[in-house]
Image (cartoon, rainbow, N blue to C red; front, side, top):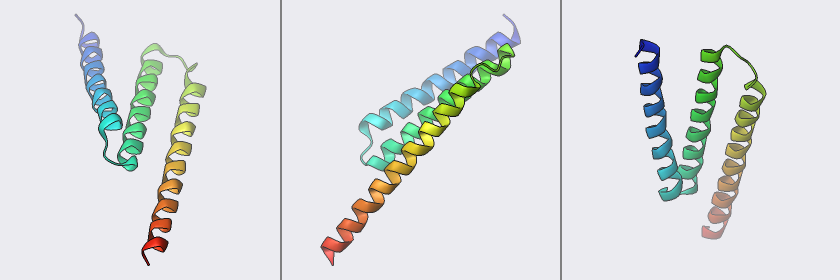
Length: 96
């Protein structure tokens, strides 16, 4: 087994565990913000995996896909932030 193969296995294990923990946080997360952050973490992991694949195999075909995933993550985060801000403002008006 080469050093590169060992590193690929180790990196896959780390990304797998991180993805599993992010999915658990998305399911169990007590608030919508926890779920949004876990979603961002999962999208970032996907981007890292696709980027690592592109570097290892010397290709750029995945770049448009990576850009769309990043844009989706940003738009999702902004949407959740706006929703939470509106909800908090409505609660403040109701309280006082």
